[in-house]
Length: 537
Picture 1 (cartoon, rainbow, N blue to C red):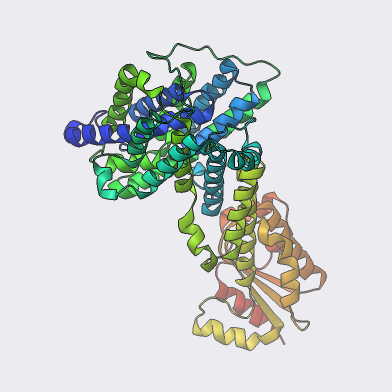
Picture 2 (picture 1 turned 180 degrees about the vertical axis):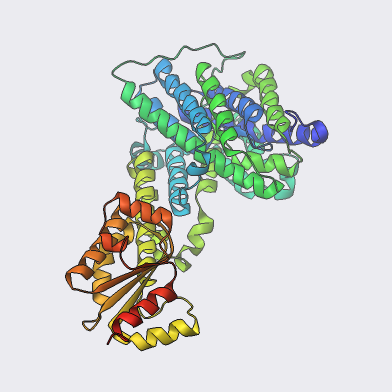
């Protein structure tokens, strides 16, 4: 494959320019919300957008600051008290971790996070973004950073509003939510709200504005880490890296569905890591694959990495020429834009239909949402993934135990059916299937004991459909064999694969499973049982 594919150059240029126009107000708003300033948001969109497109594995993806990344970055910014060398050390480390994820080919595993966890996590982030902006719409700045202080500031802001700022905030929300879709082809709603809101602020007195914005290229910043801040920097970097990876790979899946292509997840992680590492060295906020900007890029013709690079170059031109004009942008306008961003992140499509799906998934989604908003992001994801994994293991274990029923073996031949009927309750047949793991191991021995009638003389264990056995399950099978031996019940084993046999032998299970009465197929074990029990003189 060519590194640069120029076959769609016209579409890539148009798509990149359009994505850049959409990214401009969002980058300014994200930069302001992060604490690092609007110019840091613009340079984050430029640097992450350019390098992730150049080295990434999703041709049509547009990257830059996103809501989830800004929530983590803003929290870290507050925790480190605005110490820029420490803050951007975490950004550089996050980028290096993403590169490591890609080199170690972890992309396929990062995407295994269950949908309810992702939905609750993203919805929680959307709620956080909205909560952080509510007081700003009323013209007030929360005294402390964080979700709880921001919510506590809302009642006072409502009781004592800055009416000029409130007018601009409400106008921005109306424009963004009601902007006609067909107009968005020419002027995106957020950009229109940014321009109109800024123009209105010129005739309104007392509106808080961004103020001085530096121009020119950003200066190189040498990150630093101290022993006292090592833990918080590493933790923040890990959260940024994992969150950025998940955010980017989900956007890559959206791009794949729209373009009928397939992205390279590990290469995408390397590209995102390079972009974030470079951004950290120049005081730019971190980013990830941005779904809305990627969709806009694809719909307006973008297909290859050229489009993402064009998007970044357009923003460079804006920074170099229009930065002084951005100084007049009101905080309330950017707050209104971010409220719409938060609203779009909340997974309303799932919430509308969640009551028709599994109740456990809905409960898990709401739990992760609550932990995201009121505790912290990493706790929310870890708890969500662990609970989802345990629920899946429990479901799989229940299915394994259900399939173990002694009276309903899989399809049998007429001869096997005759032999089973002839044996009656004197022989009980257990059929293991699929992977037998620790989930079923805890109840396996008890389940088998409950199914063995008192008059049983023999037990047949059919391993022919068993594909995997772990240590816990091997010990449970060993317990079944030991119980059979202690109760003088003959044991017949059939269909055991060589790798399963090697695992059991390595764990020193009951020799009756491995050496005595082993048969290649079930019909032979049934014949042996009949000869021993029924036909025995």
